Length: 178
Image (cartoon, rainbow, N blue to C red; front, top):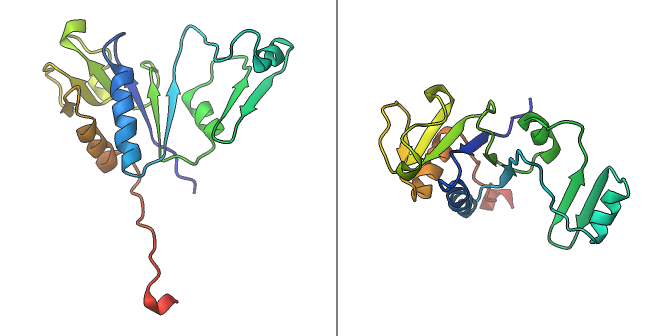
């Protein structure tokens, strides 16, 4: 039986620090040896290509898939006829990671960590049932774990203990196995 890759969506109002917190969380998880994928939601549409560049020209010519590859990274641009669900995106990631973090998808069906700043208001976007935790500088009267705005280490600890599938320690050959 195939194990599903755990998803966690980082959500919150505009300009509350979602990307900043996500950057810290990624670094913390990577420092612990976890492989991390990130999906950024953009409800307005996006272009990662620039007019006039070769890949842009190929897409403009009608290519359904354009891939650019170099010795240390690759990117694929694929036309779709609908916005892909998180489960469809997971299938396209094709494994190789321990966790998929998303920025956005506040209406998605995956567990969420809400980032909330007092300066942006005193109400959460998500219901308690949708929340794994809240990262904030204020108090909310709900029964979920709370973390400070700079506590990526604490959040990583929480994810390791409650969300990530335990990583097995690599097997070290013993003298009797040689």
